[in-house]
View 1: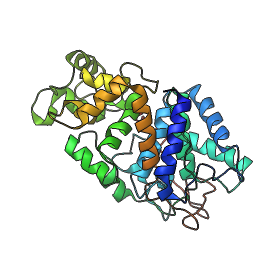
View 2: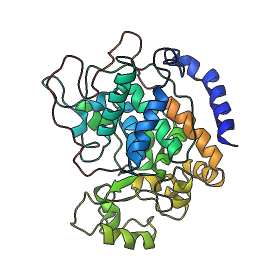
View 3: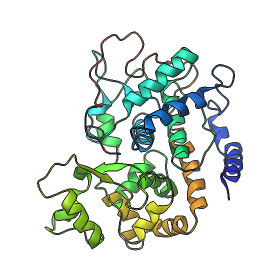
Length: 341
């Protein structure tokens, strides 16, 4: 099945599923900002010229935004007199990045369509365009989200999945967001591009679950390579590829890696190496059929993008993604930190 057929598939999906989220529509900006997707794409294309990691970084912002009080742009808010930023949460600090590119997108959109496009929708559109620009599927993004007036660092600490979770822990984490096992496996496929810090997987290399030995489900050749990149007691901010096969391409090689125990994060390999797990057959299906992965990924991205959205008169359309309207005090961004993805 080609990308055009995937688009037909997603159109049918909208008719069957997204009808329950009538506030959001792929045509939301057709009259008020018809070039919104083209503008977002252009900024990302420019950023990719100097930062091949940015596509994966942008989609990760959408994930981490949606998992904390819904897809409302709360992750983008800096510290201020009224905001405690989510950027400093355990799952975000020294990890999420790309805020400067979001700023560039917002600036371009404010020039073309002032006060129209929300920061929450920018993350949703940027995710889709990042996947497409990296060789993955396209889809019609439901739009019409509005931006939050608050952030919730405490909830971010609670809701963002740790890279050290077991499969049961992962399932529970996703279920709390209304996402099922198929969503978990499909959305994990976003690790088919991007980078990770040593700190996110070093325990697998030296002292897995307190055993004093490496993770037995980590390929020994990859183990030796990672131990060179991330020596014991070394700099936990050093980065390496999430996908050892095609690190900047959106494809199904992530799943092929799991089959030979080349998953980088514990939460990656758990999908295939947990004995008797129902995720194994899903992984095998995506290995054998990239189109099946692409279709499932699109469905799960749309589903995730509908988590607790603000619409109509809720929230606001921020003029600056880093602060609520009228708030002149904002803190420093985290863009200078060495980050995952």
